[in-house]
Image (cartoon, rainbow, N blue to C red; front, side, top):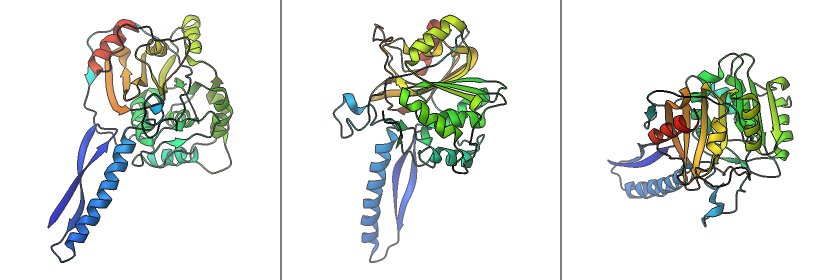
Length: 332
């Protein structure tokens, strides 16, 4: 017997698993079976490697000359909210515990995600185009489910306040409300033309879809510069959000992360993307910077704002332990 094994990457675990691709018995046609298996497997691996760079690998290829350059536009960023203070030793994690989404209603969330135009399973790993004229993509479930699972305990607090930076189609806002506790509210900022599309999606009664329609009072979408909103909210209200989520990547050479996390309460949590095209990481942060967990490598569209030009001499670090120290020193 010949056993052919191939590496299959898992975005949510950052490990490599080995899966048996084919078993050919010692028959006269076994050579054909092996060739066929090799051909199919090579295509499978090609697709896996292509998608594993994560939903916006193409999205920010605009500054690089790869095959996807120009397919996905650079989308200016939008809002957030909440802040904090000082803390003892950090808890950092590089290796992620197995994330199977068991604490979430996965089947219903898959259906909801598909209704918004996204992929239909965490195994698909397939970013899809948004409906708004300004473009953009709907993040793959392989990105959103691990993030949602980390945020779920904070979302389930009664009356939780949530901020969604770059809400796009509104699907992540809808999924967060779907698992949130009583009285939860989501506030989101993105480009102007996305507001009506996302609002219509959350209020839709056209098709029987789990969790829809959502109460109009449970969410608020605004168009504009997210960092302008965030800076003003911090000045006027102080930290006000229990959960903050970013659907785009913040530039580590700007003040974007400081402004974003400056609006989250000390006892709150955040999931965000940090880095430049080709070197981006999705993080989960909680306990005022004492917990900093690397969820996966990604390649998202960049957050852009004239209010946050590149100014930092030393970029925000992408290593979890160093990032924890930076957050505690500069935000909380």
